[in-house]
Image (cartoon, rainbow over all chains, first blue to last red; front, side, top):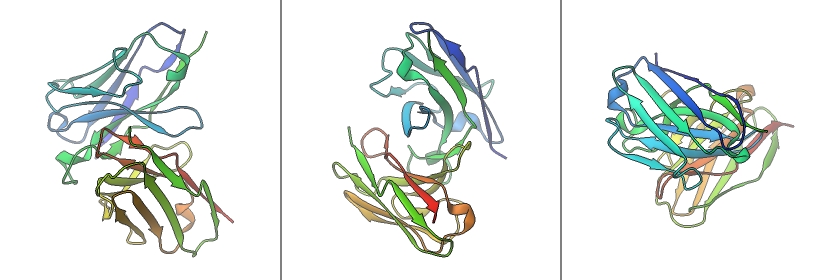
Length: 124
Length: 106
């Protein structure tokens, strides 16, 4: 079955960096675009970034553009999110999510499988 | 940025009742709208995509309708496990989510 397991969350000071990972299994990882979506405590959902199946295309939310970098290693079935110059407003649970378009949906940018999330806290 | 406004913020209903949730977009998103369910401590679960198509394994009591700027998620008869927060999401122009509607037990 499809599994997505995030790791790498923790507590960091403003201005520092954090690198999140998402280990995928149960499907052909290299065939799917992958996303990061975050949820601030007791708040709604915010899309963060997407990477194409082969890593050649990447898109970001305006709120993280220039500070966050999404990447993937298809040989390791792993998705990454490098978060630099962190701000307190980046505090959230970060989910990796599979794009539905390469599977059961006719178009992309919907999310059919999600990990359990990893909490990144930015605080002095 | 396309803003999605969900109403009501909270819906208080009893099991067996019909739930009607609304999502309004600040500009047309055609039919590029999805609905998700989220329970405490869990990630969201895809229910509906392209406004009216149920995702794999989603019960028939969940249905979606609408196009353009006005969308509705209907739960025909609430089961105990349906009490949760529901989010809409558009993919017409980048990706944005609505603020959520909490369906709580009355």
